[in-house]
Length: 486
Image (cartoon, helix red, strand yellow):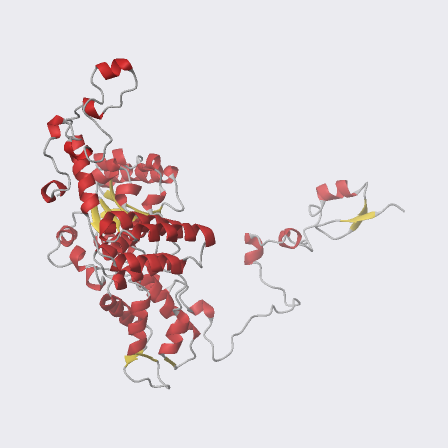
């Protein structure tokens, strides 16, 4: 007997030769509903299936019911605490007093609702996006505010926003503010997309970046925008932000913990504000972790905060601003003979993941530039530390570099060589380059001897002091003189 095939609609069996004919007419001859729906066949729900009422003979679907002591997840706000606590206006925007304080120019512009094109530059969690959020609420209804991120969009999306902005101007006489987060992610060619539209006033551009705009943004874009520098938040500002978030969650800050109440110790808040290094987002995320992991009506103590806020990284960028900031701080501390501070900045660089050979090269330079003739043993020591670093690598090389760092910091300093060399460079840059005197030239033939090359020079050590080694035009110049050194 020929193998039978089941119809996917009516579930009846037919031979392989008859199934094609049946499939073309299945369901048309009878008005009865099909035994199987499209959702049964393809595994997804159609609009018709969504509105269909369940039959009485169907078994009831199992519904998850949470335990009485737990709140259903659907009733909780899925947004992170840091997002829920974003300020809506300047009255709730905490920190950055130098930027949005009562007497600041930016605040006056915001109050006048005259928003210029801006570039907000600052470390993570300092309030760049929150400030953009405040601006959006300030101009709500009068300007269209579009929020984008360079991490998830490209030039085509920007062009679409510009197209809509032109329509807004033409039809509603309403301007458009385009906020581009992480704008440094756009390359220089992509950044050029903004230029003509900022210039013509089609959009007001606000960019946010954690990298130095001078290096990461086009000079043409910077000339059309005002750079607003935001610093990392102080522990006092972070405390205000955390206390506001605790108040929203009905948790009190107390000096002495009450184990039967929703409370957190004051020392826990102090510890948290110090450990996050000015990052409000990190502080709020840690607080949310503590709130979600605690039991109902219980306290949060210092040990819980230490466990939740274990430092997994040190704010450092091996190619960005922090790289150069730390290197500068290290050299200035050594130059100032502060061995304590020098060792601290060295430790920050190592913990931040800096390449040890970079530090070693910097120490070799410091040994000549800042220590110089003050301690001639400093240069061989720095070179030895550099070679040892290459030999054993990290993490063992840290002690070698720390040894060299402290030695250089404690060594007597002398800028005599450094200043004298700069004085020589300065003299050369003035453009007066006299030829080598004839008596200092090495005569290699009878012709050059007849021209006077080497005449009057003697290798006798008793006579070498009696002749001049500088050109006649530089006679009497002393590059080691303090005046020339400066």
